[in-house]
Length: 285
Image (cartoon, rainbow, N blue to C red):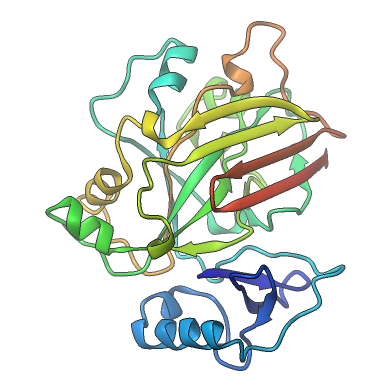
């Protein structure tokens, strides 16, 4: 299933994009798309059956905002430097273990919402990423099979980053990762059954129409299942948590000088095979 949330900020309603590309209203069956729903196999099965039967009422998508496909996100765990090609372009040694950092849930916006360039920013950068959405409590997982069973689905994430804040201002990466609007998510939460191999997905990103990133999850240093298993050794993952799994080569930081960092007026578009497409205009905060 392709689960969605549509409507104005703070008043989104649950929806589903059916196999024919018709937007369907789920608000008569569930209050929202959140961790509680993702952990409820029975309700998810009923949604699937309703979608297959064609009984769900259609929604007019014209002029309707697409919000983040998940409400009440618990935490966002991010994996740094997780693509071989990205490590090569930045001159970094591939890590022996996954690099973890966190993003606050309030960085999440819709896939076509405006991204704000922070005040004082000179190095706002783009990063297309595969987001893994957790659907089962995951604690000290022992195998890749257990990790895969904990995944409810996948989505497109834009891990916007301010490199000067991240790298040059001291402390941890958090200052460059948690600025307002720095995690567009969606348009869909695609359930795991529709993504048979998360290591075979193409990821692409354009800035003002120019292709900047064109990678594949096959380049991940730590595959999805290993990432989920690994993270569960250090923290408990709950339904509705998200893991952003890293970005391929092509970020602004990896370009020769002068590096083409983002500015107000730019437009970023990004997509992942089968998971949909995003488009964000940028303006100053």
